[in-house]
Image (tube, rainbow, N blue to C red; front, side, top):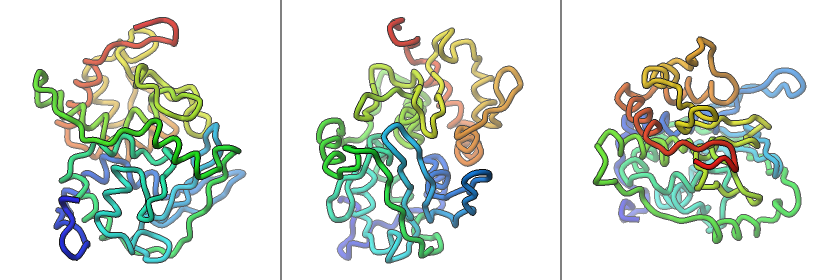
Length: 287
């Protein structure tokens, strides 16, 4: 990596900027188990110690420990290891990660943001919590399937600015497509779990934990085409919907831990970008 120093310990990233990238990327929401009540009374986990189950149609993925613990976390990683995981989808040993880890979006991140994120993640307390193995259905349980998926669907690269668009639009595109990885949840996926880019952000009927993830394109009926810019800004800030209700499920965590912590300028950039997209209706309806 261009950012690795001679010792392999990585670049001198900015911790304060790393906090912002960390929040915008939603790292804490996924890598910290919030605990549950009822039939699965898991205790709340330590920050970044992993354990959160992500239930999908392929089985259940368990989010890993990314604290600086040298045995169970990423304490033994170099910056290059971190960069490879985030932007190439591979472990320090070269094994491919399952795409439940949104590296297809993170690969688009800017070098500086990755360096700053690394600097901040290293400041967390170490937690000695072993990772729980994924519980996946056959044949998805075969690690070779992850390698096949990566070779078929993953395209490494940074997000290029569109010179025909404004700086605000480009910032919104970067946040939506790369850091905040909105399309990972809000887009339908094929039979092997690859995002359908032709219908990006058009909703996912088979979202995590069995939830239907809504269409956030500007389609008047299927999406958020009737929302005003003010509606979108309020939603990203407080979670309040245009009808006065508040968002629930996983998106409530996204608002609380991510979009509400963004600057007003970044929330506006996201809204401007989303409103500029082509409206996509239900499958078969066309655009």
